[in-house]
Image (tube, rainbow, N blue to C red):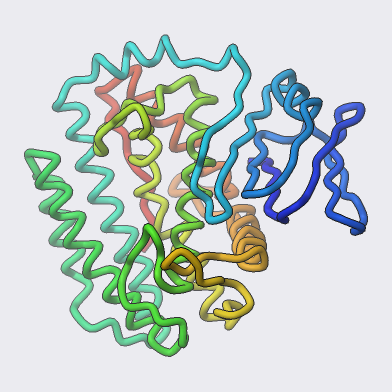
Length: 329
């Protein structure tokens, strides 16, 4: 997915003849061809001229406005964007159909968590309790009869998962003890929160491009302020597409508390250098290829699009229950 990340505070973006120019103080300007972009993500204090916004609307390039830590304030999209046709099909899904998908989402999230941890165990990390507990939780998730039961199993899996991450990260010196947010309390949680939000925004664009209603999901509770479907689809990708990137940065010794984070408002947040570090690592990871069960390989960007298209097929034909992405063992 071709995205422009604007994270350098104080930057100004202008447009001429469908080419964007990004200027930061006296630094050399960068130019980007607008027609080549799928979306623009604006972090914090970055100025886009009215001409840029109008050009994005004409070219159907969504502009996402985020806080510096990645929280989405809102989106600018062309007026023809909509999801009325598929929204009717989504609303007609039975509770049984939605429960089947919710079960699969939680079970596959637990599977992907286990596989990521298993890879670190194979590298010599002592992860404490037997990882088979994730198998047992996944088996129970596939039999759950309510969303409350699923959330309970997911919570138990998350506690075990982040406990294992604490063991992996024990020697990092970054103070990670457990998963916390709003605000994150240490550099690891700052990177994780930022990474989840970036991926969430990518999924939102893909969901809208397929004409799906992002507010109508299967697992998470929808509201006027919560696109539940996007949060549903995020779950299967947390471990392989965000956690794996953050763990890689830490294990390569690239994360430095003083260089990449700042303490403010009672929490720990990525600074400009931290955001740039993560975004570059994320892009590199997403451009890498993964093998498919049916043979061949695809970039991880295409994996996101493939899963959204698969969910769309499920909406049209619920008999083909949606199958979330599973890491290979």
